[in-house]
Length: 599
Image (cartoon, rainbow, N blue to C red):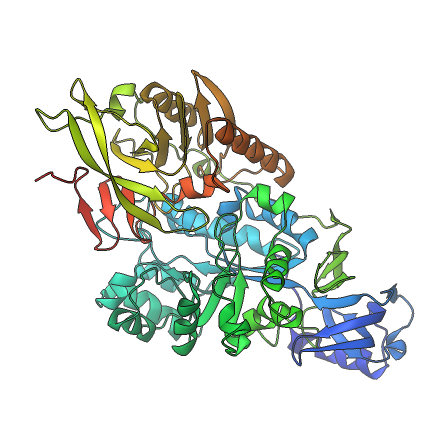
């Protein structure tokens, strides 16, 4: 069921009475050092009073707010900061349903998330988005949903399980938890005036909500300006200082991300720390964090610590993870600061630099303390339609992964997807590969990649090559998490292992599995849409960590290589990707032949 918080308008009579001393507060925190992100001040000795899940009084002395039934918490001089806000993220990337994601991040001080469930949209369409939206509203944290914009992300270059229409977007804008449109990945469509893309953005703006951006091209000339003119209000795809500056200059909020594998804060935050741009136009986010990162390293607290380590002043870093984000989404009067009327989302910490998360309140209720979750995070009853989504149509055979060479060749020059550590973009590489008995074989750094169709049971398999993982021996890793169309991606050095891994996921109903030397070495079952588990985060994190160890034992040395694996089919980020229709050059948005000299 939904867990609403009484609106400021409805709560105002009691908030006024508490602040005036005519009625007791529900909660008073005193002996604090208050961090005011509105004024960027640190205020020793301040106190706060909470009623109806909102701040009623914020000032030097809340004693007049204490009465019968008031809970009083002594802060011990510690800092009180606003609950942290993630401005752009995908719950599915944590391999967790919304309830378990909330349970994982609450002890890390995240009290609000702006989520784009476009992963499940590709698998289950609008019905899947509604499931994510509904479970989000049940949580003790604030989870706002952005309606996915692009399924498929690049029409004509991939086939999804479902397609999102402009009518779907218009319908979703009336749902209670929808705060805007998810990242508009089809930037060529916007630039070229695609009617559906423009209508989705228009429907969002007519509803008075925010259009999320995603401009993944290095071209900041006319196409970039045309994209900004379409209405995208933010962008998280920057990787360099010049990207952050360009977006801010166009009136877009520049979102700097630190996910499990995307390290884009350090390279962009110099726009603030060195170039002196106004920090209120910058937001911190995670984009994609898997369960191992959440449990082992943190969530938005990890991002804020990293920003500070990169030279950002602590109060500015906190603004970028609180009030800046709330303001961007039109919710500054609701979230993001410790001020009267706002939701009482707050954290006690003993250091602004190291940011230990010692106690967390959301809507005035303590949800975590000392790293332990105190709140209940209820699950939906996920239907069978959300669990039976891996439809291979047949068993996959080793022969499905054979790549025939052009007749008469004993070697070929092949296009190769080059993985870039800690970044979402890939490189378009080439490699000379041997031909044995008419089949192209891999060697050295080059492994084989295949996309196995899993939505309609067509039995289709697309083959190509990838480098950068460092795999050795007879191995394969398969995953039904394959942004954004979420077919099955298989990377391997041995065709028998590739078939075994693919068939195992077909039997499981989705997940990630690594096979080596004829045996299963690690598996993360993901039964919900082939994307998420409804098991506790710690359990999923343990499985994910075992997968990471198995990848390392197979020769992989990349940081969080699973995240790189999951993006190999993302046909809206340059340079080279694979889809169910073939090899895609994202620089030109064209399907291209596998071999360099093919005609």
